Length: 454
View 1: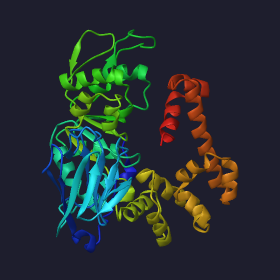
View 2 (view 1 turned 30 degrees about the horizontal axis):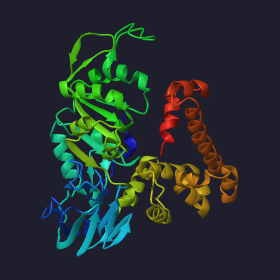
View 3 (view 1 turned 60 degrees about the vertical axis):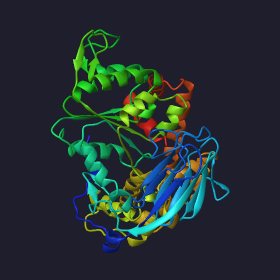
């Protein structure tokens, strides 16, 4: 299905100042341990992130046994390098102070486990990313996004498996389709397999197909998504949710480029490019034994991480204007005070939440614009509901003084979230039984489940 609301039809560009802005380079050196003397240059535009740890996927690999597989991240920002501890076992220390997140600007020592890193400041250089403001339907003029576009172009020109990582709502499926449409496979099909929307018991037949009579309910033979994607691209969305016991079968299909339908002895050759997407930290999942390392390394040949909206400086206004136009605002201008409030918000739900907030403002019109508390609720409804969940949501909503439509929406959302959570718990996480107990179709139950997974 096309995600038309991501597509821009207007020529909206970055300002001259932003397009010509410079950024600073940094060099991170390992001072001790087996990798002493190793240096990592961080000369990318702001928003680019490098990982430190034992995993082969890390840009700065450290074999120190006290260092976690994915120990910390180093992200270039206008304020310096943002050092973030990734819930490591032995922690991250900056200049002798244990941190969760800190900024360094050069001349600083960062200790990961038992290894010390030294950060040096380099020269200011012009940005090395693209001057484009989009890649396919991916829209963004920030340095964080423009720095990704050359990598996107290289991935589109290749045929290797790719792994797209990023928080919920950052546009992973949109990027996957953009890579497909810019590739040599553009004339072939683009097929999506959502690991959260298919019960584990049906994953094999959905991916590989089945023969008639191979199991109860198999009234006819059916091709799986691998066969449907022949000659094109298969996106395996939220691959981190795939049961570890089934991952070996998926790895075999990817490596051998052939599948076997359930109930058949015949192997079918398939010509498919695999793109996987996940909001999970797969390095951590591998470390915990919930994801096979051989499947991870097979998928992560090409790897790209989409930045959250809060790290995309300048893109909130650009995207809000695009959504405003795409959702049918017509000649109505996008209010400047609304854009300012949007830019001051952190957007935990990323682009999807921004899109929904713009849609809510357009639908409720002056009812939202005249009421500051209602407008703030429309911007951060999901985040506010999270904090209200511990108490009585109805009392919380009534105390907020919202309009009736916004109040009703907030209460219904919280009820649906709690209902889905509890009915799944009662049925041991079995989606089929939970949907039956709920009296709704499994597909709709899956939509609700995905909506409130966070």
